[in-house]
Amino acid sequence: MHTSTLTAGAAVLDNPRSGLQIAIMAVAAFVIVTTEYLILGLLPALAQDLRISISAAGQLVTLFAFTVMLFGPFLTARLAHVGRKGLFVAILLVFGASNALAAVSADIWVLALARFIPALMLPVFWGTASETAGQLAGPRHAGRAVAKVYLGISAALVFGIPLGTLAAESFGWRNTFWILAGLSVLMACMIQAFMPALPAPVTRAGEKQGAIVGDRRFLAHVALSVLVFTAMFTAYTYLADMLERLAGIPAAQVGWWLMGFGAVGMVGNGIGGRVVDRHPLGATVVCLLLLVGAMLATLLAVNRHGWLALALAVWGLAYTALFPICQVRVMKAGASAQALAASMNISAANAGTGLGAIAGGAAIAQFGLSSLSYLGAGIAVLAIMLALAMARHRFAAAP
Image (tube, rainbow, N blue to C red; front, side, top):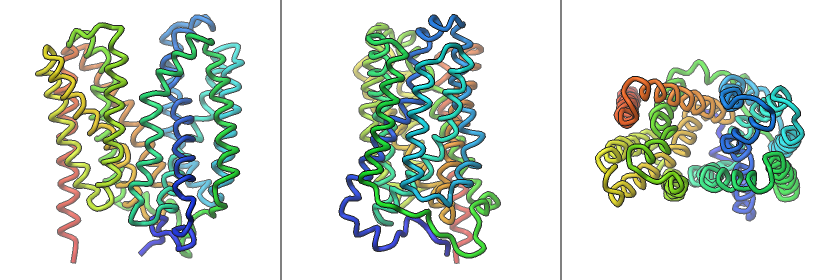
């Protein structure tokens, strides 16, 4: 058996402040994810200020996502030996400096650098934070601990982006980045003050971080995450347009519908963390089935807003639950190198996000908005088939 951070030592398990420390990591996650996604609401303002087109400004989003996808696993493996407390502090200080650089950017090239640098560190944070949360909470509560850290993602998507956009409208996009810079430094100080000096997880002699890359079972779990996130983002990327153009929701109200979608999803985040510890593949399949049903039900309910709200609530629950489920599932599959495994799941998620957006955009051009739910559901069915095949193979191989 491999050494695993989900089976942390007693000294860690007896830590009475683990709840506070996991909460601090969740808030740090909120700041980091807000840094990643806030720019979506700032594109018009910064494009006008920097005198560039919206499409050119949009490439900053692509730059961030593909940087995470390409460099995340490599950097996580290279930094696997670094003590967790110092690593977290360093990452947050990098985010602080990068947000400050974004705030003073004079052109798109400086702003691109300010986006590229933190994108290198984001998957390292997710990999190590997820791993450390499991280490602090202990093996029986690892899923719940990771879900609490992932609560930062949900909170950023629900509250960080809308509030950040509102702040940009009130104070300007540059001051919004200054606020994020200050929050990043504040969280670095909180971690320095309250986080224990956890060493990097110890691996057995001869055991290498990259060994999991040659494990077919592990790679199957990564591939499953790519399919899951592609299914999720094929339709979700364009959900605002679907609500406005298909359901007839007034443009001024779409944001509130999306906020409700995410707020309900925060409940799904907790549910996902509870169920994944016992049956990772089973939890994945159940949530994908709910996702398929909810996406198809959304189409049927576009003219009945009460039923539409119910369908979106189920969609939001399944969608957000799949974040911690995929993370814990891949971490368990790569138990001998959980930081690298978690980082590879983040890369898979970014790959799926990009592929979903591309597939959804192509579907809109060819078949219209209503095709997105069918396409997303079809990809989710493929993911279900893969998960069931993986479960059967593992059962057949058991003694």
